[in-house]
Image (cartoon, rainbow, N blue to C red; front, side, top):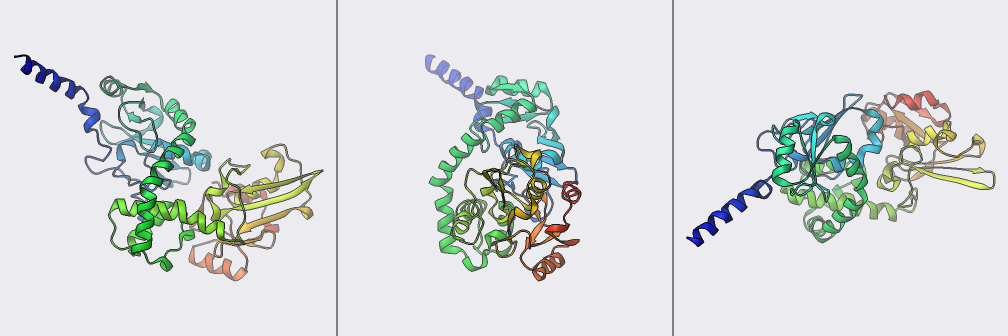
Length: 377
């Protein structure tokens, strides 16, 4: 009799935690994936498969109607400095209905027993408060608003990154390196042609330059190429613009070293002090150039004494920004959206303009401040 009671109690205790044990982030049906094109399956920040992490996915609709989807609120937080002023709506997957709903009206369960996605602390969303409270009662956690959950996600970014880098160093990076060395056509992979890891993964899947890969293998080699080899190649490129790991763009606040193919520098003398700043794209450099006092305790510079370095889009070499040619209106986006794409020669600019639907080629001296801000629209 006592044995039977013990078994019954065991079943009851097991059922209490059953939701946590069996909870899956994979979509149970057909997920709402709102990105367009070949990259729609993957998070542009970390490369994770959106179907596999659909129940924690977040999406944004930008003012220009572009739609971007992330595997988690953590990846949205990581991308936030680049898109903050352009977002018209934020969406999140409702755990109950598995539909995308307005994130700012959703109820988040913060810190339940369910593991987080790209974060040490889970943040799961529900359209209705009653559903959130019922989930929290069964799985632990606190019911909070989007603003509170998002603030926590931004606050824990660095610690989350450090934790997951250590995890990838033990697993995904070595796996990716092995695939790259044993299965990939190395000469056919040009990492710096891609703006996001999702673009890289889409290309690897389409071209099969690393053979037929399952999602785990594709993610592993994508992470190795994007987060390891890309930076090694950049650091060995002696003619590239040097950017310190801790240098932030004074305009948007993003770490410039994360975007080496778009790096730009501006320097000039300010009394006894030299101003030497890095930017994650020409557009932000131009914003500073036209009005430095807007972005910190800087004074107006004398144009004749200013030095500008930008990264040639094709060669990835540092070139004189004042002598460069810039294409605008193309279908190629930088970290901050629409960009002034720089080239060392007019011929290169003309080729790019033709291939990428550009609308205009400009020289540095002809770029007015109003045109710079027009690219944000």
